[in-house]
Amino acid sequence: MKNKSSHLQTNLNRNNKKKIINDPIYGFIAIPDDLIFDIIEHPFMQRLRRISQLGLSHLVYPGAIHSRFQHVLGAMHLMIQAVSVLKRKGHEINDEEERGVLLAILLHDIGHGPFSHALEYDIVSSVTHEDISSFFIQRLEKEFGSDLQMALSIFENKYHKPFLHQLVSSQLDMDRLDYLNRDSFYSGVSEGIIGSDRLIEMLQVHNGNLVIEEKGIYSIEKFIVARRLMYWQVYLHKTVVSAEYMLIYALRRAKKLVKSGKEVFASPSLAYFLNQEISYDDFKNDDEVITHFSRLDDFDILTSLKVWSNHEDKVLQYLSKSIVNRRLFKIEISRNPYTPQQIEERKKIISASSEIRDVDLDFLVFTDKLVNKAYNEKRQNINILMKSGEIVDLAQASDNLNISALAMPVEKYFLCYPE
Image (tube, rainbow, N blue to C red; front, side):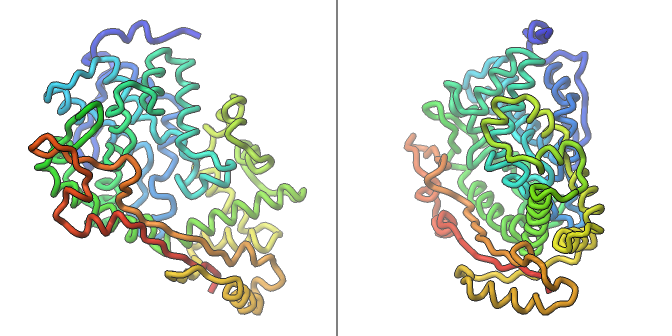
């Protein structure tokens, strides 16, 4: 296959494929490089137009129908700003590294499945979207050449400048800066709006790692609080949780029926995953797996749900029809786990309903745990570069007592069932 990297050795300012995209958050986003343009045009990337950024959140916030494609373009735009700021402050980032980190952020979500996180562990067996993104980048490397090697090295945190990876994936990365502003805009939940321009301007590198200058500490505090609020109000909104778990259990039911030999409608690529358990090694060793995954998007699932609404299996029919018509299950939230006795008691009440009598209630009554951790001191913590030159963790540097409290995870449990 022709290696395209040979014509990409000039700097990032070539104009023959330079395009401008109008974005509602940032205004104009410039595509700065030929290769980046070609990657954006690739079917793997165009698929992200058909993957919702917020899963089924639009059932609560009708405006939240934006896509992963919009998000990754926005994150790339912020990365261009971040690289510019760090170069201006004297940190060496050569053209190859700049192209690599822009490609890494552009491709960081390419491994998302339909409805984003909702189906991450059901279409495939415990393979994260980050793992799948790595496999996609490896496939693209075969088509576009060595430039993708740099992107993969940065994405997987194997490059010798760790701050480049931290710009892509950390507790203060361009991914989070974009999705908070973007998700706030489209959901209408203003609490998530953050000052991304100021945060980026405060970026600095110390001993190869990304840090924030001391004068940016109040902007960081607002960022952490905004993230916490967005989790409870949008990402973990109880009605959103109800809808997304109903979708998870609909897919699980379809998979169980397929395994038992029942006929279940599905697109060819969805059928591929319903008929078998696909593991990490399958993705790694079989190109056919990534090819089928690249053909899956929200429309495969939505079309299936519409057809399943008339399936002979009452459980699959009930779940599918309820999602399509937004008859969402009731959800109770508790600080304590729900006991088996509480779950069985709920099943007895539901089994008295004529509409869903004599069915497998394990697919209609379910419980799980919600965790909101806005700041994790143990995972790539946010370090503050004090004026004295000392490096201090955000939780210790902040005079806002809430930041230390936000470092403690909040766990809640839910019980979901038909009314």
